[in-house]
Image (cartoon, rainbow, N blue to C red; front, top):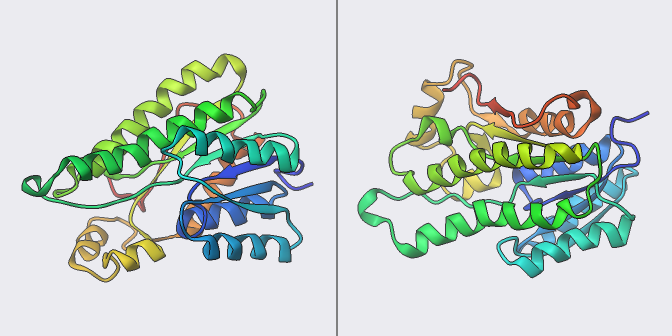
Length: 248
């Protein structure tokens, strides 16, 4: 039997990159998956098609996780479509970098609203439906520990998400709901391509400090989400798995 047979998952920000990889990996292990997207319907539809073509179950659901009504609707779609909810992956996130002198209120609130408030609102909605044995996985970043220059706000959001992970692990533990985080290093995705990070001096500097000597791939992260979602991680909560090739 597959590790997640009969389970239902919501993956936010799953139209591309790490979220898409996680959605496909969960589905490959038997979970029915709600593929959330904010703007890229075509991307989400492609992820759903890949899952269903492989014999899995998935639906695409639009929603902005930083809006309470949308977060609730994303979760409701899982229950309406598949009858339950067992796994939530808070992957929606935005990364923008700016030196101190360029930080604006707009920049601050955009990153915190999506990266932190979005995870809280979606978890709030999901916790009303996830039962004992459920798993919540926050996709954070090694930036919460490495704290690179010109990333004060982004790093702060990920530090906040790490703190949220620990706090909610204690709060939801009595309900037997586990809450953990994955903290990736630099990962090759459509996002790093669009942001001109891939192949940049920034990427080369990060790789030079990474013991395994390369940037990560989505395939380095997705199996960790499967592990944390499964009974194999049944004794883990409040943990952050640093998946950064040894970068600290």
